[in-house]
Length: 172
Image 1 (cartoon, helix red, strand yellow):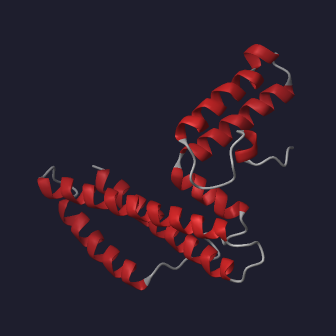
Image 2 (image 1 turned 180 degrees about the vertical axis):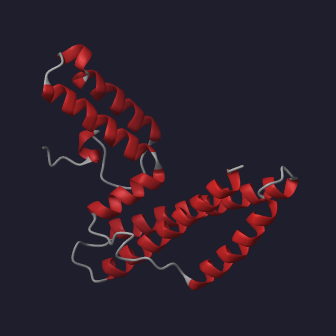
């Protein structure tokens, strides 16, 4: 089993902000190199192709990329840090009640709620990107890294919660 990260596997820098075109191009180029149709069905080729597909799937999705990068960086898992900011939780409880009121209808209110949640998720994704930028700027032994890693985990927890609200709203 290779110790190569998804970033290395795709020839990309180990950072949150990635160029989607470079990600796609690197994936396509490397997938031709390891695809069983070109290399035969030997187990090493099959394993390399599966690992490349997993790397691409993970890095293509910003939330999954953030989770993966946080783990690589030594940040806490969702099981280690479960909390979110108190103000966020109060806001989400209010949103949860509003979702229950509009979810079974196809009204402008439901559409507005979906838009609001998608914008909130995008804002949290932007915040995570800024936090990763700050983390990259810190030297490896800097004491501020621990607090920033915890803040990143809390941001990702909040994003996951918003994603759950969106999923609940979209369920009929």
